[in-house]
Length: 461
Image (cartoon, rainbow, N blue to C red; front, side, top):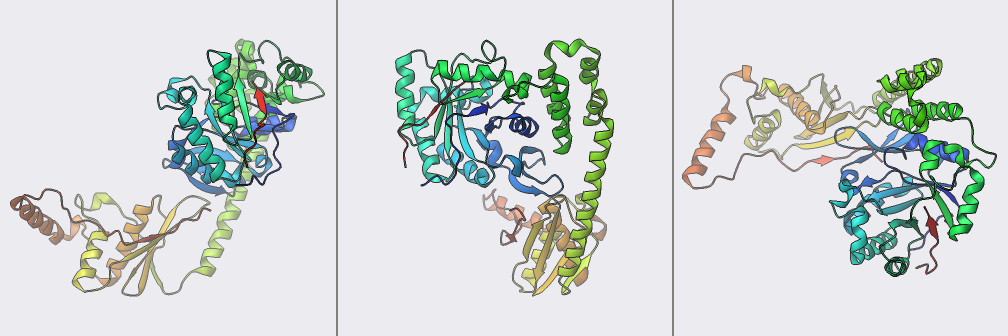
């Protein structure tokens, strides 16, 4: 598959992948200061496979959101052609699935084969891959053939030079675009200012240089004109952290890495006790910026909500019956739901099974479901925090419109409970312990989301 991107890995100064450091504010700041390419922190394939892609209209970002609503990876248009998504994986199929999930929002995909930490190696990822060349070859070959963006990997030097060279040659044959080699590291001993980057590159004969600690301490190391004072760098970082709603614990961690020996100063102590983004801004005399930015967010959110409501009103199907209801499981017996009652009623009346169509609103990630029964559509006027709750609410609207019991405790004797008891007893008598009355699986859901290079360049780290 042809790589259709201008991204090149020769002669580049690169922000290295760093756990907890390589989040969006640091990546954007490094680009501002002159970095050519930036890597995100390592993200594990299994965690990413659980995420859904959400366009965040308020922040103007693309978010990959976990089931618990935590943003696992956030990116934006500013870095789309410069950011490399680094993945922890030990399985070619999972790696490809994640690569396809993020491919349209990043400039390339990297497989981490250098991390020695237990959380990575215990799953066969990171440095553990170095002892399994066959698996390395499988993962990289699958990615190169399966996506359009460049594929890279980061390795560590093996115990012998010969083994390292043999591995690199085998990796090169997979067709990847570049290999980053984590040797002994250069930031601490050699790279103190921009001019040292070129010196280091010449000394190692690497195609490009990947910088970690020096950039973590002061990302303006990428400036040809020389580094900025640390106070300005930290304020620039905080602006991005506020602008892109970075979690305050991550912001605090990165600022502490920059302060280093200044953590015992008055400002360092204020940062240490900060428990919110607002308090971090107060510690750096940026309260006004915080208030202005959050006010802009609130105004934008209100505007988008108004616009969305207007669009919903215009597009509303007049044939859909609506009620403002929600499902509260505390009002129902265990294992009895309105959906089960509606299914039972449809069977009794010889109607087709209910069909649920569920959508998620990108702005606030709430759900709305429409159920179709006997060619009539029903929905709740209220949006719910989960798909399951939205479907139950739609079933309630249908049942109440039809004047059919919905199974609430206050309705008295529950015929479904009695039916379940009879069926359970029959199952026990027949030696069958595994069957239950189940909700139908016949439902529809739609979510608003949205050639080998034998001379692959090497990057020294």
